[in-house]
Length: 109
Image (cartoon, rainbow, N blue to C red; front, side, top):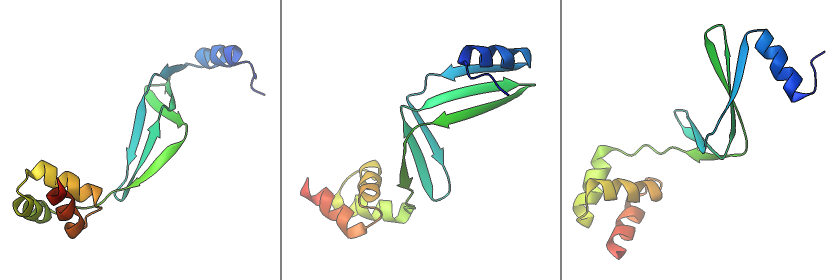
């Protein structure tokens, strides 16, 4: 049975060649093809054993869906609204790829 005292557990793991350290993370993002898991103020632990590093992340997260925006759409919105490509891309991302909504938001400014 493992000890329940954190100090004893850490000492035992050190004897087994496992090094544990806390990583002072502010944010962790895990990206997949279709979404992102965004952890704000997570607790991150790094474990090293026999040359292999493993990270454990705990905390609450927000699931953000990724939207594919084509370069053609960015160029079209930039041209129609008379803004930079960066501004057009940002507006398209905020509008979740909806061309009309992005154009209307940019024209309101």
